[in-house]
Length: 123
Image 1 (cartoon, helix red, strand yellow):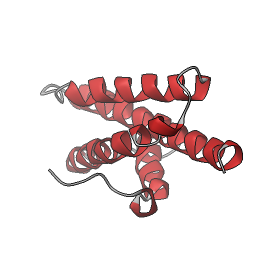
Image 2 (tube, helix red, strand yellow):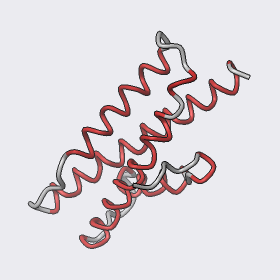
Image 3 (cartoon, helix red, strand yellow):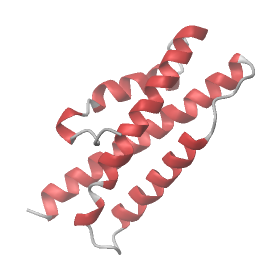
Image 4 (tube, helix red, strand yellow):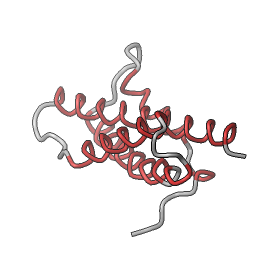
């Protein structure tokens, strides 16, 4: 297994752009083949984001709200990865991919909060 990506190598802008393809109500949805590829990319983003967020836990006091929210978010993300993609209809596949997209957005927000607060509070 490869080591987690360093924060400098994470392209959170591209991760959010991929998520927005499914969450933007005005955008055209991807084709069936495009949806499969996008779903795989979103799963990969989550696999990169979970260790990036959890790596920041050690510098936080255990009674901090930001830490508690990030810990809960990574737990939800891990459970989301454990769910198998649906074999059914396109509607089910889109709903599954949208859940992954929301998870990507949530993890990038946690990462930003942890980084922002670390730079302000912990010199």
